[in-house]
Amino acid sequence: MDSDRSNHPHSGELHRRANQRVPGGVHSNIRLVGPQAYVSEGRGAWLYGVDGEEYVDYLLGQGPNFLGHAPTSVLDAVDEASRKGTIYAGQHPLEVEASELLCEVLGWPDMVRFCVSGTEAVQAALRLARAVTGRTGVISFEGHYHGWLDNVLAAPGPDGSWRAASAGQVPGHLDDLTVLPWNDIDVLAEVLRHGRDEIAAVIMEPIMINSGVIEPIEGYLDKVRQLCSQYGVVLIFDEVISGFRVGLDGAVGRYGVRPDLATYGKAMAGGWPAAALVGRRDLMEWFGSGTVNHSGTFNASVMATAATIASLTYLRNESPYAGVEEYGTALMDGLRECAESHGLPLRVAGLPAAFHVSFGDEGVTDYRSLQRLDLERYQKLAGVLVDHGLWVAGRGVWYVSVCHGSEELDATLLRFAKALNDWS
Ligand code: PMP
Image (cartoon, rainbow, N blue to C red; front, side):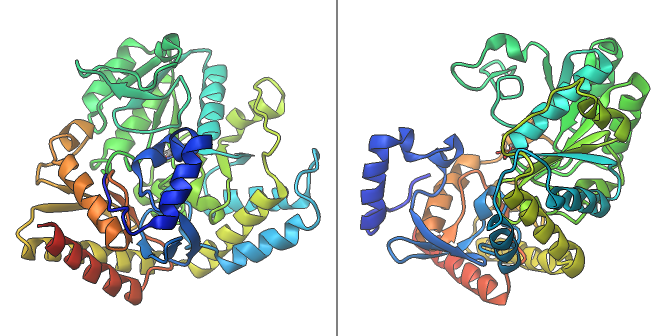
């Protein structure tokens, strides 16, 4: 994703300094391929660059800023709570309140363990599933992302088989992982039938968002649920992105299918680093008995639990989902119309709160069909969009926040049209 850096002297200088001290100039590899301008401030739906640029933000920190940047109610709650200390190596009232509130708004789980990142929540879920089933195998799905650790990070090799995605991964750590095409119930049924005594868990993004936004086809999640129950396999929904974004009760509420365990993060805490594993009491109690280890110095910190309570309280009381849906729908339509008037085959697909932009018009139901789209062409456009004041990444996933309104919609469509004019 290339963008024009010539009129960004301050960003350029920060890049130069960062590259001396920070590998690649970034602290998370996903940012190697994101917008490269330095940001001095985020407010609502906007980001402000160090060279005076103003961006309408559609990355929202890769999802967490569903309430927009610097949401006052969360800021105030964190400020007030953390003035009394941040970590006690003991329990505090806010963590009880946050746990109760999380279970209440989700509606189905009995218990919760807080942690810091989605990656950790997934690891806790997998360990628990292995402990309770006494099996080691895990089934995941092509294009779904569950964190950067050795036992889940996989990418397709030249022959299409899924293997270690990074140099340095312990190859054997993927031996227990089977990566299947998503939305294909027959393949899953077959693998479960053969591996019934070995498979501990099926883990999925119940809406595949990371690689391009694809919903489960009708009835798929129900059938996955049935199969997992039939074979005694723990069903884990990784709702780290979909949670609190596609609705207060996430994909579970949207499709009416309950997993055994689920992971949340990102939009849960209004931009603060917090994540959670939730689930059924009979499973989660394995942590409480000490049989399964789940630990972390910063788990359920005062800041994270204060942020979680403030964010969930806002989402429960204000229920901003209709507004987000309205904005996202208008934006998706506007992008399509604008591209059409430029004679460009832009594909805008997914949900209003999280959608995918690419070129091409293939029927897309899974990662393989997604690869038939012209993803590279969009990557090139993304750099031009950043230069025109739209904060997007080459991956093509756009997120909407509760702060996006008519001002942002007008600004976005104007900027998008100008970018297409300058690009084509
Ligand atoms: N699961 C999903 C579905 C995710 O999207 C992500 C992050 N993009 C993770 C897990 C890992 O979360 P974190 O980056 O907070 O470790």
